[in-house]
Image (cartoon, rainbow, N blue to C red; front, side, top):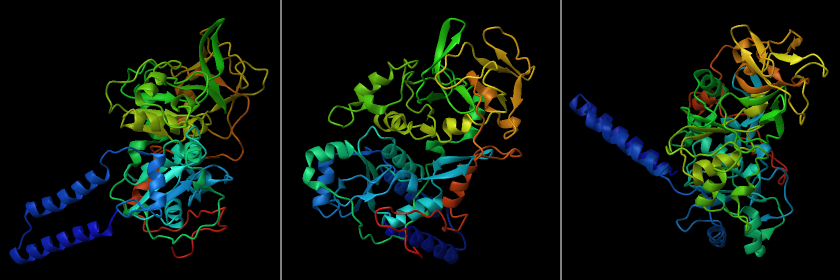
Amino acid sequence: MSKSVFKKFALLLKAAVLSALAVGAVSCADYTDINKEKADYKAAYYAYESALLEPETLKEYIDLGHRTPDGRKVVIINVDGAIPANVIRGALPMPQNDYFTESRSDGPLVVGNMVASGAKMDAALRFAGIDGNTLIVITGANLTTNNIHRVWWTFSYWGFSNKYVKILNGANQYFASAYPEYMETPAAINVTPSTFSVKDLPGNNIDAVRAPLGEVIDDVKAGAYVADGSGVKILIPTMPASTPVMNGSAEVTKIANAGVIGGRIRGGTQLNVANNSPTQYVAENGKYKTPEEIAAAITTFGDVHFLPADKMKRIIVHCGAGQSTSPHFFVIKEILGYANTAIYDGSWNEWGNLAMFIPSSAAETFARGTGAVQSSYLTWDFSINNYIDSLTNAALNGNQLKNTQFTNAAFDTSRYTDYLTLNVTGPADTLAFDNDYSGDAREINKADKEYQENKDASSSGGEVNNPAAGGGAPSGC
C-alpha cells in the first residue's frame, strides 16, 4: 500500500488536533471523518476480486519488465519444496518450508509446519523485495501441489488482500506449455531488499482464516459440529481416510489412522473417504475447473452431500499437518465464495498426539496399525472416565498405559474424537508438551495479532535462507 495514504491520515489527524487547540475541543465529526477515510481505504484494499491471475496476464506483466500497467512491481515466487529445474522468467525460488512455516505452539504442544511468525514473514518479504505496492504471484509445478495454496493462505493470514497476492491459474504446468520461451533455469537474482513489514498492512485476517486448537476443541465441547453439516459450524477433515472402521461385520465409516490416535474430530464431516487430492478441481490443461464443476465434485464426495446455503457459515478444514488441506480451503473460500472458511493449522499432527492413553503392546485390544481393519471403535465416557467399546458397550478393563509424555487432561483430544482407535506408537520423543498449560490454546493467533498491532516492537528473528542465492536477508533490513 502507498505510504502516502498513511501520510494523509497523519495530516488529517494533525489538522484535527490543531483545530482542537484553536477551539478548545475536537468535534466527533472530525474523528468520524478520519475514521471513515481509514475504513474506506481498508474496504478498498480488501474489496473482493479474484485470487487467481491468468497466465496471459502474467506474460503481459513480464513483458512490461515485471510491472503491472499501473506501475506496480510484480514479484513471482516459486514455492515448490525443492528448487525446480525451470522456473518462470524472474521467479524467485522460495520453498514453502524454508520461508513460510515454523515450529510453534498454541499452548499444550509445539507442532512443526505452523504458520510463519511475524518476524519470519517479515524476513521473507524483505528478502523478496516485497513492499506495500507489490503484486505477489505464487506459483509452483502445478495446482495439485499443496505449497502454492498454503503459501497463499499464509499471505492472507497476515493481511494481504487478493489485490496484492495471487495464485497463477494453471501454475507452471500451463504457463510452460503456453509460453515455453518464458521458462528459465533458476539463478541468483539481485533483489533490492525492502523494509516492508506485516505491521504495515492496514488490518489483519488472523482469526478469520486460522482456526487454532482452542477454537476447535471449544467448538467440539459446545456441539458446534454435526457430521451432516447441520451444526453451527462445519468441520471437514480432508486427509486420506482409508482405514475401515467396523462394528462387528458392518463397516461404519473410514478414517485416517495415524499418530497416537486415529478417528475423526467429533462432528467432523469427511470430505473424501479415499484421498484428498485436489486433482478433482483441476482441468486437463492444469487450470481450475469452473465453480459449477467444483461444487458438483465436492457435493458427491464421501460423506458430504451438501454445501450450505449460507455463504458466511464458518467452515473449518484440516488434514494431517495443515498443508494438503489448503487447496480445499482455497476452492471453498475463493472459488465457491464461502468467505468464512479457515484452516485448523495444527490439524491431526496436533490433535492426534494430544492423547493421554496408549496401548501397552500391539497384542492388546484396540492396538491398531495404519491400514488395519478396526473391529470396533471407542468413545470416551465422562461419567466413568473410561473408553466404551462400540461392539460390546463395555468399558475397557484397564489395560491401557498412561501416556507418560502427555498428561494434560484439559486437552486430552481422545475424549473428543469419533470412531476413536488407539495406536501402539506413542508421541515422538522430539515433541514438546506443556502439561501445565491452562490457557485458551489460541497463543499463536494472539502473539501474531500483538506483533502486527506493533505491541511487540521487535522485528528480529525468523531468519530465512535462499537456497538459490546462497544467503539470507542482508543484515539491517
